[in-house]
Length: 308
Ligand SMILES: CCCCCCCCCCCCC/C=C/C(=O)SCCNC(=O)CCNC(=O)[C@H](O)C(C)(C)COP(=O)(O)OP(=O)(O)OC[C@H]1O[C@@H](n2cnc3c(N)ncnc32)[C@H](O)[C@@H]1OP(=O)(O)O
Image (cartoon, rainbow, N blue to C red; front, side):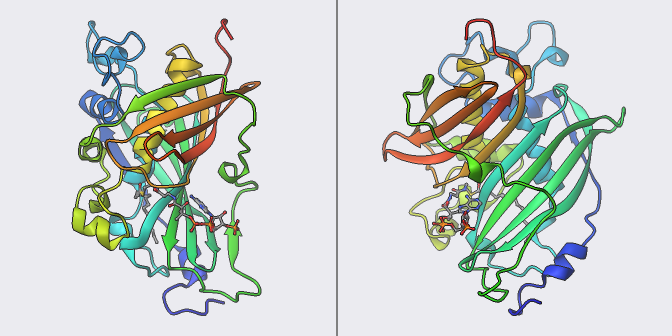
């Protein structure tokens, strides 16, 4: 039974999310690729030009696998409101993202999303909410991907008895928190700069939260200036993995897990370190200027390319 007035877990869990439709064009997939830094260092990069230009027409463009995460945001409640969950929206942070990919994305399409609440946890100082989104290609009805989005609501915990904190999950293991970074030297390391305007570009892919663009909103949230979208950082890290481990082939990615450990500011340099464990790439991404890890997780691949 909930003890605080703002949270009613049973009401939240009984909520039925409306099914939504998301239509995107080749322009959206290109804008997304540019937003996560594709071709930023080299406009004719052999591994990355295919995400932003194709000589034989836009229907031949390839789509980065992390594009899937946009579907989870597009499917979630407008204004971040849900019955039974009252909280201070300025303190919301993206905690984790888990993506399963079942098929490469076409360069444009119409997607049907089904959302459910996958988890709700009272961590005392914070509440954690997890949403699961299944995305189907509208025309064929085929399942394209599944996203699990974890939202960390600072200051919203303490809604249950501290002796028995509320915890609900509709799945078995929390994959992102289970990541152990090896003590050995990484198999590969990739350094990439984000631009000071990175968040202003990335937001055009659909996440217009002013935390990433408005200095006053960022200050209220506890940051000296606007921070980068977590999914933008994840996009940079997975692009590094595709480049270093998959020899540029985005279709080798099977699933992606990432936990956002610390905020990143636009303009900072990201160093992604990667370790191979069979068909799993364990990674962590550090901000070079502050020598701090901002993201860690793992990516499962279908197979390794012959050189590994
Ligand atoms: C109500 C309806 C809501 C609807 C909302 C729908 C929309 C949702 C859309 C998704 C988000 C869109 C908006 C995007 C925002 C961003 O992109 S924000 C930028 C990216 N994110 C960040 O920069 C966050 C970086 N991380 C941190 O700053 C910190 O890790 C933290 C999240 C503040 C937590 O640190 P701390 O308070 O020190 O936590 P701990 O004491 O270590 O741990 C407490 C428990 O919480 C668990 N935990 C810790 N971190 C995370 C995490 N990142 N994700 C999930 N869980 C986390 C941790 O395991 C502890 O639990 P126990 O082990 O059980 O004690």
